[in-house]
Image (cartoon, rainbow, N blue to C red; front, top):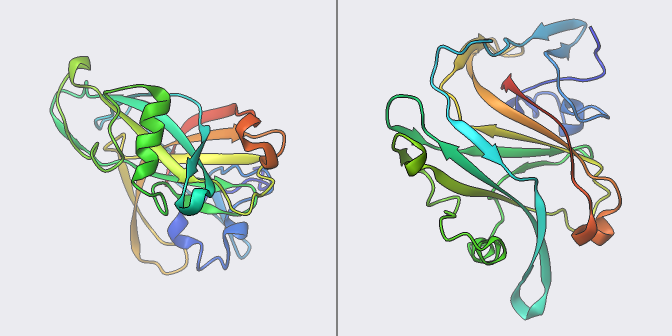
Length: 223
C-alpha cells in the first residue's frame, strides 16, 4: 500500500501534532494513518449506499475581491453548487465544508467571512436563487423544483501563499456513517460519507484573479 498519501480526521490533527502531519506533500488522502509503526485503516463508503444521498453538482472555485474598511481589498474563494433531494423524503440540509491546502492550512468554510461577501458573490454570479451559507440550512423538499442553490466561501491566505493544491471536503450530502474507535484514545467516533474534491492551482497567488483552477479528482470518502 502506498503510504505517501494519508487520510485522517481533522479532529485528530492536535494529537498528530500539526496539520502538516495530517497532509502529505501531495495533499491527498488514502485509507490509512500511520500511528507509530501501525497502519490504521478507515472504512470505505459502500459501493451501493443503503442510506439517503442528495444529488449534487457544483462549479469550480473562483476568487473574488471584496473592499473592506478604508478601501482595503480582501480576497476570498467561492464555489457555487446545487443540491436536489430525490431521496424519497424531505430532509434537513446542513452542509459542512473544510478546505485543506498543500501548505498545511486547514480552512473551515465560512469562518472569518463577513456577511457582506455573500452579497458581492451574488452580484457576480447574478443568480437570484442563490442562498447564503446560513440561509441554505434547513429542510429540502422533494424534487428538482425544490432544489437549493448555495455557495461555499472561504478567505484566501493573507499574506498570499504559494498554494499549489487544495482539497475540499463537503459533508452533509449523505446519511451514511460508520462508527469506529479513535486509534489514539480508543474512544468511539463517527465518520460521515463526505465528498472529496481535489484541485491543482498552477501559477502564483500573487495574481490570484488570474490563477487557473484544475480539477484533479473527486470521490467519496469516510471522515
